[in-house]
Image 1 (cartoon, one colour):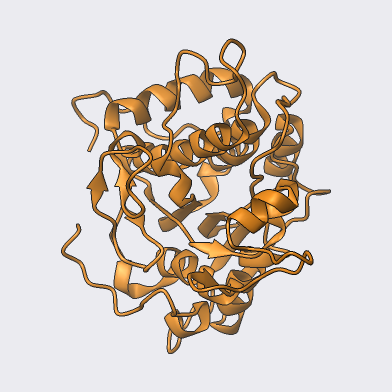
Image 2: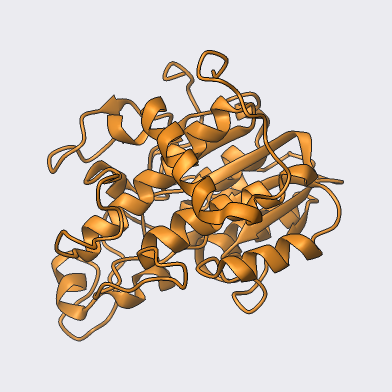
Length: 305
């Protein structure tokens, strides 16, 4: 898949990606679609003719499986694309959701897993799932021995990286079960996602000046640019039929690289490992239990793609 060339760079916007694309009759669900990247993606999709649903956190709290279950029960009608855009980043202290999962893994991964599983019966035949991950997936994979930091010291960035690797693994797992699903990183964008990051860290990241003002330095994107990859994967004819891929911040299908502190681009091998994807899928299914909803194909290892 890495030989596919996409005619958009990091500077491309969601509107440019969908220029000339008619999405009349299509219905898209976007989590976290009321601000930031999700709002930018929603506008571009609506401008192209799609019906876009953007539930607020009051309607759908991804960290609360009962909230996810209620949302699923109340859903009616088709879904042509689902963009798992909502998330939290670098929560400074270890916190857990009601079910005991570490909060970032619960919100960024498990809530979306439960939502997708619960709504599976509403997907159209060519529905697309988009998991909004991060370049942080290069820094840490899923620690299956202690995913919730019950024994190892809690680190907000390791926890965030793990949750973002889990989102890429979910795209792989869905793809292996016959559902078109891909992941992507938007790159560096100022949104509410950074609300838990202290000023000193923001300055060290080159994202804030000494007076507390946000800096749009080289390498930072606007929300409209960050959302380009979301709508590419959700609705562009250019990527019809592509599944199990990861778009980098340049809106290109990423090379698989060894994870660790050195690589700045690409997708970590641990984020696309099929065995890890299946293991995480089984772990999440156990966690959500009866909330799984309509079953996706239960393929044997030999039959998986």
